[in-house]
Length: 244
Image 1 (tube, rainbow, N blue to C red):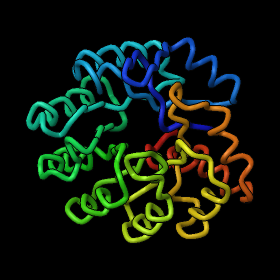
Image 2: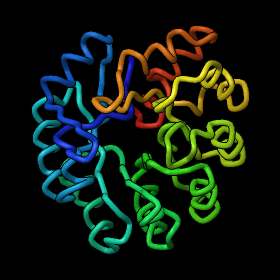
Image 3: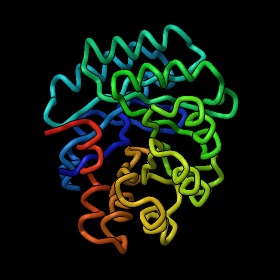
Image 4: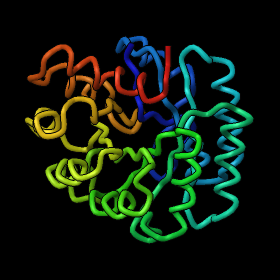
């Protein structure tokens, strides 16, 4: 089973992104992806609950292909964000949490801790656009949470420092890395597997923002054995989410 763990649906004007379910499933079929783990852009940039409701309708219509992240634009929403995670899990059966982070509202603020705690209570992995040092901080405060560092440090906010991302993930058993990144550096995935083992690496494309064909090739073309590739491309998420 191949699972893309980092996918967006909806409209995001800031990043010039637009994707509906038909486009995403068309791309998934071309790439041989069985399931898409999706976050709604409306939730991250416009209206949290409305976006999660829109995603829930798409997931309900394509239960065999889509899984939902409960998306939270900022931990500063406090109790409302916690209640939204519970609502998305209990009403819609969403499987994960997506928390956005940026320098003006860093994810290391104490308001984030309760969000990670409630996600851990439900066994929901947390995908976050964050830096290695921020993940290091969060793991020290909520070590039971299963935190996925989006982009493995490979984005401008984290200065593309995937070596630092791997070093931090090595310190924390529940800190995972996803493969989506804005740069395509030779040896990036191989280095992560050599240091951490393939069990801590998750495939993600960040489509439609990033080219999913290039992101897939980073894993399929890596100098890794078939078992490692299978775990990264879906086996790890299948295990973490208890999928059949």
